Amino acid sequence: MNPETFAPEHFRWDFDEGVATVTLNRPERKNPLTFDSYGELRDTFRALVYRPEVKAVILTGEGGNFCSGGDVHEIIGPLTEMDMPGLLVFTRMTGDLVKAIRDCPQPVITAADGVCVGAGAILAMASDLRVATPETKTAFLFNRVGLAGCDMGACAILPRIIGQGRASELLFLGRTMSAEEGEAWGFWNRVVPQGELMTTANDLAARIAAGPNFANAMTKNQLNAEWDMGLHQAIEAEAQAQAICMQTEDFRRAYRAFVKKEKPVFEGN
Image (cartoon, rainbow, N blue to C red; front, side, top):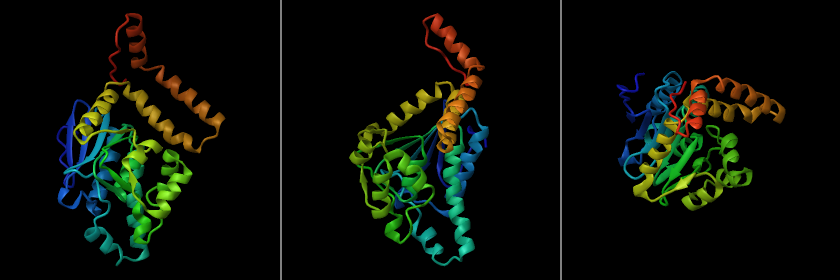
């Protein structure tokens, strides 16, 4: 996958100055996911592991909504006709998308407006940073369609963002979380007017892209890895990670810039 020429079939891809923007673009249906778009998104985020020229990713939706989750006609209906092995293939595939978002070294920023529900809420949850508008309505509505709230890693990730009690409320009730609640609870990093949504997301992405990208990837790796570590193991893992980063040219560039009282210009190596 060459980020300069990549032309996905099921979403829009833009790439400029190290920042890739993935836009879900079925606005007439509030940007639902299909079997094919799940797979293409998963494969795209997996491929980013090998594309260091991509330094940050913005995930957004077209037409005033982020994502309405799995398409009722193209996913939900067919699922009711599948046998258990087929269903497990599907649920593992959707989980693989979350793994791919978490495993790619680039920080991922969700920029959400309007509807952000079901698998759409999961995409936001799986991202590293999240920006919304006051009109954003978020719901993990699996319970409302007769399914468990434990979908695509929700029971593992959501409590770590907003706490066990609040996550339990959203997952048991399937109720909508307002943008105001989401910001107060720490789900949204920023809530900004609609006209400022992409400006804010692009500003965050540009600041990340201008940073020490090797070190940023190390930070994301440690944020993932340390979920399963005890304190002593985590401190040792961070000592090793930081020692590796201290061998980079970016570390030396920062030192030289500090001595000269200049702003460092990082190159990601």
